[in-house]
Image 1 (spheres, rainbow, N blue to C red):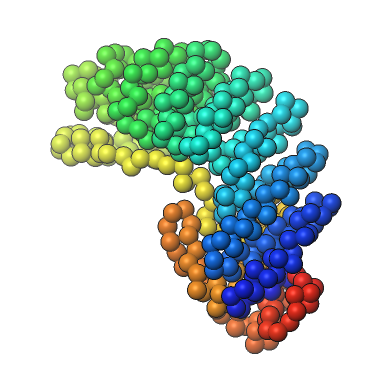
Image 2: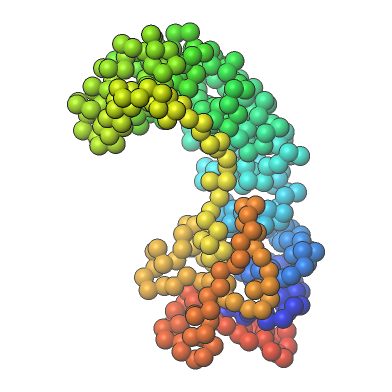
Length: 425
């Protein structure tokens, strides 16, 4: 199915011959051409050649988005993969992904994710303006995703954090229940990313405690109260209100309450002295969840034997969060890029997870590939080589490879002409 360039210039030559297919009227032909060019870019050694081919991919992908919503969705799911590997492909086409009022919800959600991934310091103001507008619409799922995207933007791009906080506070003032709860969830992440910078808004958050009925929002608010217990005047009263329903709360909320109460006791011993014993008793005697029970015993032993150690453990500096955790695992991404325009690229799952007896496609070793270092997520790593598999194929020990539609066939370029090579793709 795919040939393997063996010398410098082979990949560039093949991409040149494939490029006219990007103008084809059939969307499936265009996506297949995109897949092949993305594949060959792994075997290019010059950055200028890679950048040139990235620029070629942008117009045809934008054109596909003028089709119906079903075709749009297929393209959007594939674009999500492409921009994780090559974000420069569509970096200048952000406005194409702004949502239209008549877009189906599945298209809107896919566009939101792409907008977030393409956002940078130069275009973030336009993105934030769009997200604020989306957060006032009527579709609950879409609004939630928009609010969460505002918070993720603050974590991703530091220069826009102030504007994102202002936008979230405006949304909280609307008093729309699900908007307020989603905003509190993402503000917790902003507090973790930028400690000691936005405590002034805690008072506004505390005004909305009665509106919180979702576990994730409750857990986020409880974390904020515990983390800033020494700066909130009535923090013990706020926690005590939540403790009335401790045994009825989901485990997620119970864990947050347990940790927040211990933090309160360490930071304000007098205020938390009456709360800690009963919470530890509930956690160790009245709850069946083993995680909660074990954490209760750990806190109890720490507090009773070495309060200094307890303070060191509970109040230890937390690692700052980042949006890198949202990125797909590099090896899975490389595999899915070889499945562009197939179900795998829509599901974002490897074929073997839903097709029996299939094997993943892999980048096959060649002198050109071996000479390059692949950069993923800001870290340099050597491209994984599959020498044993390559030796089996090239030596004629094909086994089940020929009958396997998800395995990469190796074509030795040698002295073959470009037209003959294209027949092998």
